[in-house]
Image 1 (cartoon, rainbow, N blue to C red):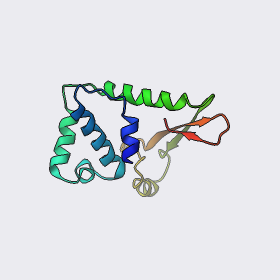
Image 2: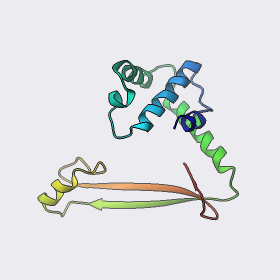
Image 3: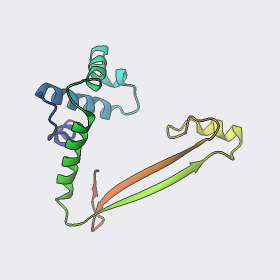
Length: 138
């Protein structure tokens, strides 16, 4: 996971190399435990506080990180002559379901928290090379 995060964020410029190292550390922590909270994924309270402080930093904008990740994506895509971006949009509608059924599906993280209208729109975009033999991470 570590090599992936450093490679994915290699173009990140946050004005200070320490911020880039912190970003890579945050990504590694959260990616290694995606189902846990920030304090749990961080390992200790100091690292969790550092994560929250990083997110509230006035020294850079989230678009700086997005731009770097976009550049990494473009570089990966350049390795292929043709790339397809395949999108699957699935609508889930629990509006007409019985209250017993609605309670049973609330265990799923994709479930809407809106009790008046139980539903969710899931989008999945996969990028494939032209021969369909390799998935490219977007």
